[in-house]
Length: 555
Image (cartoon, rainbow, N blue to C red):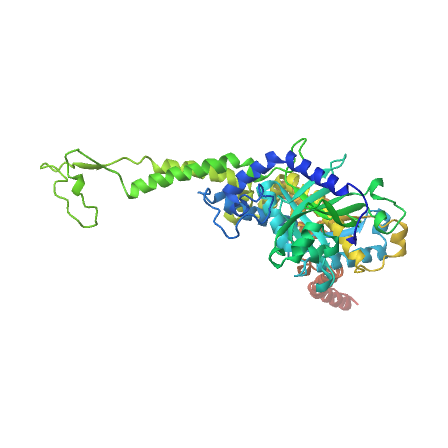
């Protein structure tokens, strides 16, 4: 981000604060919904929405009071892990860049440039200082619980070198708006800084009078103050001029506002929107996403209550309530193991003390298991247990399962590719370009405006392509049956195995290093043909010698 201190626009701070308060009031229903979910499956977030994600809650306090059953809390991290493994697996390059123009895709210099840029992007993205993997996991947790995850992408602080820095923003802090096309283009984030931190961040001279006074008193320097960060499209009132390459030519304007004193303490701009926002499912007319936890909330609450009942039943079963006649021996009854209680039975041996029936615990267990299945289904756990629970599947069955997973995941996970990963890649390239970390663009790309697209090579993309592989396997099965019936193998001639095998390997996630290249395959075939020819000559040699001998004798 290019930043410029100070602004002369009167009333700007007040208008930003008013817009924030407006957005906050409209989100009241979401806040109560999110708090409801947090209490059941993500207790670390309890009260963070009502307190705007601020420092008001005591750190390290116990927050699991209302969470009786942990099924949802355990399913949520698995959902985040599934999302990461399907979209952004750490051990693979899960996307590549290519020119949008088909003609440029055939240009060698353009292809080499995009390959180099892709390598640089992954190198800086997965630097330890960038912290992408950890923050991306946090976005997945927020997505599974609350339906919306927010990532902020910025240049790495110069003190630590060049590169990228990622920060998963707590949903309680950020409010965003869509444009007329449903694309998020405005975000207002509320956060807290102590007076000392604010002076470090913005410069003491830019702070309002009340915060400057706090800096003068040693005791007040660590007092927290609220700030807003507003990012929105730069418009005429913000001084937008598309012909400029300085601040006013940037597509997005950035304002940091102190709520105390209602003052803009920093103004800047972005070429690309710095927030990448992921939404799981979006209901009509709503801006924020809905989550698996929201869909499973009735089951989560029911399971919590069922667990309470089963615990009570279990307690009564292990420490039973005793029933006795009012003039019996219950006052002196000894429950110590090995003790003898005289008068506990009649002379005929009939028990005079009985236990209160506890109900059928097995029924409670079955009811709880039904709710757990619903919860695990909502968080996609059961979808990924299929391959683990049935390891003896054939290759065709594995491909069929992969195809089913791709079909089921593509509507929701596929949205993350276009709405979350796409804008994130655009932002990353912009940040790296501003730092001069990208290679010089070939002239041929400059002339074509360098438009590009991201092609995803993640497990999700392969699962979506599994339909092709399963179709081929079904064709092979049918063809094999036809050959067995007719004895004519010519039906297999329709299949181009040389074209199919590399694609099948890619869909099945076979590492490229395990596959031979085209030249190596041709060399093996040539060697095999030579060996076959030599074998044929050896087999024909005795017959040829006999013919020659016969011809010699005849002469």
